[in-house]
Every structure is written in C-alpha cells, then in structure tokens.
Image (cartoon, rainbow, N blue to C red; front, top):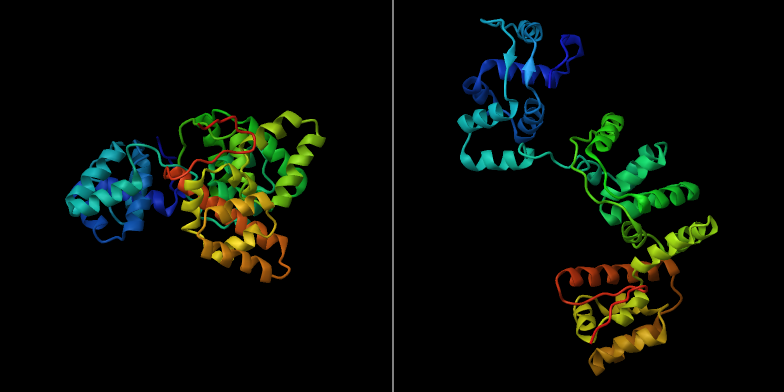
Length: 340
C-alpha cells in the first residue's frame, strides 16, 4: 500500500513508521525497545501495511527529523516482515510472542474489537444516525448482551428496521466491512477488514432479544407482525428461550442450575413463574431446600416486574453456560427436538 506523497497529509504515526523503516531493523529495534507495548502495537499495525514509500516522502520525513537519507531511492519494504525481524533483535522471545499475538500480523484482526469495549450508550449514540443496514451489520457482530443493550437505546421504528435487516443478513463480504470501517473509523477507531462470515438471521435476532427486557422483546415481535412480517416473527420465536422453557430441561440439568443460584434470586425469578415450573424446581430440591424456597416466596412482598425479569434472565444465562459446557440441554418454545 503506497502512502500519500505529501508530508502534510501524514499523521505523526505515519512519520514515525517511515522513520523506523528508513533506519533499518537494527537501529529501529533499539528505538522500539524504549517504547511501551501499546506504542509498539500501534506502530506495528501501521508499519505492517506499508509496502512502497515514495522517495520524496521519505526524504521529507527525515528532513523533518533532521536526518538526511544517504541513498534517496524509493524505499521498498515488506512491512510485516520488517517489524517481526526488528522486534526479534530488540527483545526476548516471550515479549515478541505477546506483541505478535496482539498484532496478529498473519491474519487481519476483527475490526469490531474496539467497539466491543465501548459502553452500549456510546455505541448507540454514534450508530443512531447511520443507515439501518450499517447498524444491523455492526450489532450482528457484537456479543449478544451488548447488542441487546444497544438496540434498546434506539427509537422503536429503528429497532424494528434493524431487527428486520439483521434477520436477512447472511454472508457479509470483506468489501462491505471495509466500507463501514472507512465510514466509522474516525468515531470509533475501528481497525481492519474481516473475512465474510455468517452474522445474521433469525437466530441472531433471538439471541439479541434474549438480552433485552421482556416488554421490549414482546413489543418488537408485535410490531413485526403488524408490518406483515409474521413469518419472520415466528422464525425468531423459534430461537427465543424464556424462563418458562426451563420446564423442558431434564431434572439432572435443573439440579446443575440449582447449584449455581442462591435461594433469594431463585425466589425472585419464580415470583411470576407458573405453578408448574415452581413445582419442577421444588421436586429437584431437598425437602429442606424446597421448604426454604417456599418460605422465601411466601414472605416476599410486592416486587417490580423488571427485577423479576432480570433475575430470570440471569438464571437463563447460567442455563445457557451450562448448556455450552454440556451439563444440560436447552430447548426453546419452537424446538422440534425429542429426547428419549
């Protein structure tokens, strides 16, 4: 990748990278050894993308740093290899490996890495005015809890449109990722392109909705149906998992959940549960534990529905983690699975 020829277009990072490249691996290594890991990582990301540097540009940069080039020919480099060789001269093997793991010069790092570290309100604030397709693509790449929290910040109409677009996503080309990267780079400093991968569909929507308050989830599905998208709403429901779906968990799996949930939180979650589900929990507890849970339910006064739903969601997350660990099997409302 050729860098622009005028130094007034270069950032300080560009100039630092060109200076290091012009010094050669040995001297550049001495300089890198005086920087901290974060500075090395930033420089490495820039250097690894450089290939051909125009002569005038290199000379101008060196003049700015009061260093004249002895041979003013265009500098042709393999930036990634240069950086690896340079740090190999400058530091021990362990630190080299740590830095290369962070840089991942062999394969492009996920450019959504930085956005995943942002507060959901911050993400929502700069996505709010983006095209719904851009919003859908970004949310589909986020962790489901964060995506649900971001979606909850949007106006209702945008929520519906984004959900519809996430559901219709399939394979996403690197070219589209690059376009979004270019559009958002200044705001969130997103980095490199990612390969095409499956990020959307009804299941992705369901996983996002599972992280939202039940009232918001219900309203979004209702609006989808009102806008003649009944089939999509039904497809999403097939993947949704609610607290009542714990009725479908076999007893051994339910006992594994009980090991990780305290009595007070379970009582709060069961406050709005069906008698059938309450009895299922009672049956899988010792007599003493069941009595304590019943007592907790009896003495519990009025509670906010939001608190009940939050407790239920925490238990659902425990169940999903145990499922991933092979300690229970979850089946949603629309599942056709049969166990014998």
